[in-house]
Length: 348
Image (cartoon, helix red, strand yellow):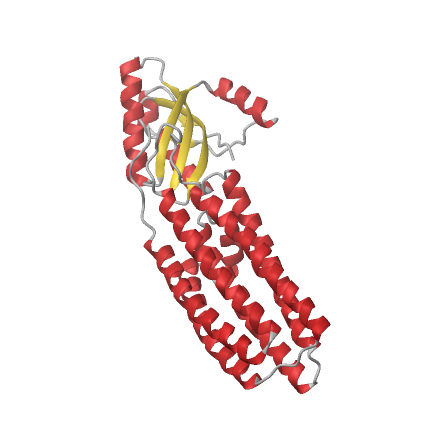
């Protein structure tokens, strides 16, 4: 069953809109400053901001495409468009942002052209820091929520919503780049070493390359397919075990089709006395309860299966026995079916 419901994520889009406005303002001021001063680092920063603007537009396009309804060619929908375009953004940060910055830096080291009117650079860097700092703070507050700061890196690894942390990473790289550009400009002028401006541009390229590698790594797993959060998996198994007529919730496979779209495949053992219409009614009840408690679950497939058959299938696919979980006591409802415990085997 494919649900037509799509949870909205206005907070992620708001962060992207704010980043687009900020990056356009920053890019314009940086290019003007680069034209007046001839600073290679400032030109690299301008290109960086322009690339970031294009990246945000691609993220918005991915979010829009992910809401398209399923069709015959794509029966599970277009949710993974978010992950595809997020991966493209990571590649662009590396190819365009880091590549151009590195090229500009090498060219400046070779040419050794001095910076003119460095005060213009300092003013632009100050305004850029203000704009980028504002969008960075918005992105941080949106992604952090109530999580402690120490849990942010783990939250990035566990996140199923790349746009929410990609803007944060890009803005963080932008602020680091501004510090490097300031240091390069200041040292180049004060020490009369024009090549230091080029070195700063090369370092900015390194920062962007590292950022791109991290973003690509995080989005690659989602593009391939990652399971839902363990808490959601446990909740699905618990809810399935509470359905009258389900003797065992053997296990579950989940995969994110998009940040707010989860596919669920359940292995359930039904009571022997249930007829086919009764099983269909239990499955319908399970679907309704799952959609009510977890709106992100958009597709549910149920396979009637004995625990032994499930174990055999699991071992054949994964090369190991399914993990054991603490049995869930069912009380009187389980006793009514002559089964005191519900074993929950989870496919991690």
